[in-house]
Length: 219
Length: 219
DNA sequence: TATTTTATTTAAGCTTACTTAAATTCATTA
DNA sequence: TAATGAATTTAAGTAAGCTTAAATAAAATA
Image 1 (cartoon, each protein chain N blue to C red):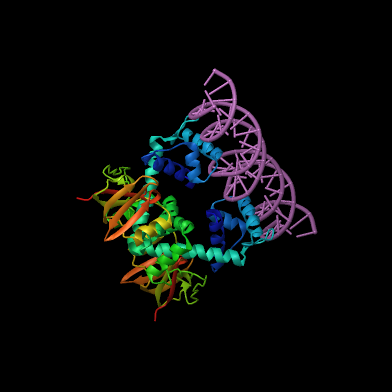
Image 2 (spheres, helix red, strand yellow):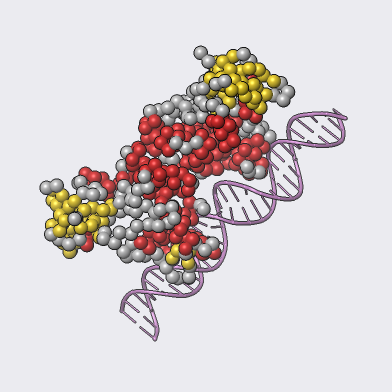
């Protein structure tokens, strides 16, 4: 499998998992930074290889083999992130950058060795679930975006699903780490913002960030 | 830089370092498992990019930029080998297999982090020198191939420069590891073989292996 | 030195993964 | 429902990295 093919199915998979799933061709092409024409081409080719279900003018979906491949790539990505975080202490942003490359040239054998070394973790340092060797993946339905959290409630940070350096630096410097608790002061509707309290600090967060922060009710 | 380009300059560099340096086009093509025509093509292209010195019908040599690139790739390869050996305990053969892939998708930043984590080692687990960030590389002239060692002398194993599983498994199971000492009993000329003694065991080694085992006089 | 063998190059062609530009289909809305 | 605009597809073309087959140059040998 080439890097292009792996990224293509990976992006479709990730898009299909979002609350607002959008797997239209132009969306996929946009994320991959290729032309729509190139995406059409790839879609047809991968359909002939039974990786993608492709009907002209319809959104793309993954066939079984394509989903399997996407999960394999995602597994390698997240195992690398966890491994680099633990051994080399790279930042949340940096592990993503490096894993984005390494995921494509990692053998199943090496992935399993890393998994074993780490004690088969269920999530990576961003809180994203790590698919098992057989493709099984935990999908905790109790997670909600901070933008949808209810005011006057305690929550625990469960996932930081951004990929930009600014986002991670903001989170790190404001104590928004996996496992930390926060209090939702209030939700503001226009522009969509959320006021929260962490460790005595009050922070006003724009939707751009609250959509990327997943929380679950604190026990 | 693509994988093909990196491998091309890497192979030229490694060939140029051998005692019997052979950088003819067909030799390079053979190692890379591509046709001579493909190698000619690549040589011309890389010459135009100032990576390779190419004169029709002449052996290939590296230009400064090409040597720099080769050393960068080699550095990443050997850092990965050392890292995987230390953290994951992979075998001497396995670290080579994995590093062969990872070397191409590793940022300079990540390589430096690995280097720092390892305490800037001078050699990898096979005894091969690790180029520094600036391209400096140790070339210990006191190493000789076991096939050229003098009979009735003590030596220390300094490098195991093969890449096949069989070779490493043989060395491992016969106590031929970096740093272990051996006594050269005698050299046999036809067929070229070497009789050695390690830890009470006597072993008769064929040139196929003794050419790959580098030793230095034991102190 | 002439001939043969071997190495290298040239030529033509293929696949992957892209591009831009034009044509077509779909969805929306007047 | 007909027109408009956006999304998608088709068409034509490019670069990288290969292939095989034929032509040519270099090296070896008689």
